[in-house]
Image 1 (cartoon, protein in one colour):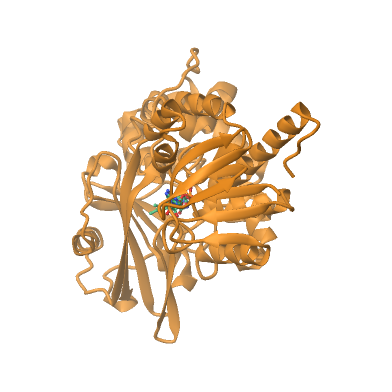
Image 2: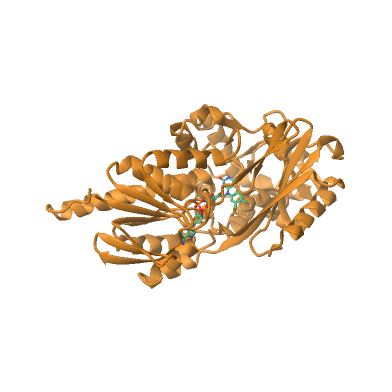
Length: 480
Ligand SMILES: Cc1cc2nc3c(=O)[nH]c(=O)nc-3n(C[C@H](O)[C@H](O)[C@H](O)COP(=O)(O)OP(=O)(O)OC[C@H]3O[C@@H](n4cnc5c(N)ncnc54)[C@H](O)[C@@H]3O)c2cc1C
């Protein structure tokens, strides 16, 4: 019987195990996770409070509905009815600009400004910058193909000021990255496609929006979705499914190194000193952890994996009585451009974005800390102090929070910097030499939850392909 081992119990590894169960019905499947819980970056605290509850997300708080893999998996797991969109009644997002909160202009499509009237009214950019943004309709597409940084590309199309004040905090915020280092091809490849196809980002984004008729996949009217009591519901359902379908689930089990025994057998060395033998392996741990496992098997592959940088981040959630807050939280929160020099990256007004996440009469806010090139404090007390200072400076909050939760994420956000596409090509070529081995997770082709789910399924598909190639090579041996 084929034995499949999946290393890493974050959403990518759990999804890989799920799809492995579906696509290899006869196989013996084991999921190995080094920590004492499932979910990796997904972790939800549910705190009973005053006849209600706070739902506090430590890592991701929502997923994108426009990428189909998250919605599809939730549907298969029976979670469709539990998915909530963001609050449609208070949709403002603000940008910190010289210590004031200014609203993002209406009409952003694919993060590109498309509403000329709204841009003309916005105080986020100067008149000079508004005129410069208009050149997007006239400037020809850059003729030479090739990657460039996100910052260079958006500045070339819309001007530097629009990039720094408007686009950078939205786009770089997703990666906690430095837009002048992030690879356009690896982060927002569709922007270059819009430039080439429509000769203008705004024209292209508008056309795409009209074509999609404002709808996300599966008819969802909200671009972002989350289950009622947090993203941990997806993890819980996956674990329930795997346990019920004979997948062996092992927590507190760290894989240390991987060796090839025969073309069809791998040995995983575990931190217990024991060896685990399998015919197929998916490594769904961060790229630097995969590098350690593969260091003796393939030093050059390991070196490419190790070269993918990761940024550390933290989230601090704080709860208040509504009437202790000096202003109405009338939107999803605010983002902070790098040029503002603040230590926080953004603040989500959680109880407005998802009203069911706080009891009536209470507010829940979440400060996001950490971006590429910036160290973050490593003590929870310091992070809490930083978050309170941020809320005081920007929102004038002086009250003590009723409760707070700090989550520290060491080396959490992979940076798809310039050169990432070439690194991925080398990794793929190297993997071709190792039939039966596949990688999944946020280090490679997408950091969002739907991408990670998809990466788990693709890794299983690669194992299937290997099986087909192997069985066509020899008529006497099959792997199932
Ligand atoms: C603060 C924060 C906010 C975010 N917000 C959003 C959001 O709102 N929406 C969104 O879509 N995405 C968001 N993301 C990104 C998204 O959460 C992650 O990219 C995704 O969850 C990563 O999943 P993964 O399975 O690839 O990796 P992880 O979740 O990192 O899982 C990898 C697992 O491998 C285990 N592991 C590591 N080494 C070993 C080993 N040697 N042996 C065994 N196990 C090992 C780890 O313990 C871990 O459990 C956010 C991320 C962070 C940190």
